[in-house]
Length: 200
Image (cartoon, rainbow, N blue to C red):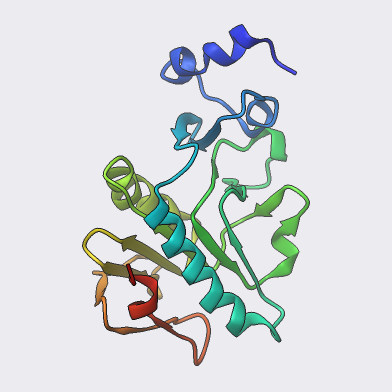
């Protein structure tokens, strides 16, 4: 276990040196972090109640659909490692904890989470994460080939859906509102009932 002083140096060194998954798995200060290209981002210890309610309802609808299918759905905290190539786990520079992921290729799963891009990633935005979710993570997921990326804003009660095109690029997002049925492009026949997702 690292000494307390090592943990205290995380923020100080984040701008000066790149951290890896090997560093990440040694931190034991009971906080949650993400690594994006070696940079450290601290996550909220406990999201707001409404965030958790939205996450729980999304999980319920996805899990019900996937009961008899060979796909997996997970909610945070769940580590997604995004290697740039064939590097060892310990050398990976990007480890994220999306709010919800769907993984269709079970070979990507191991005891540590997922290695490689999920098929669908959902981030539930908050004022403190909206900028990172909308730009840094959007670009990251696009580059790693996440087929479908959702940004869920429970304050405005909208969902922005980005789909990867044949050139590996996200086009302009489709926006879904509170009363809409949201079709899941990677899961034929599934429509998420946003009325229940955004219910107060």
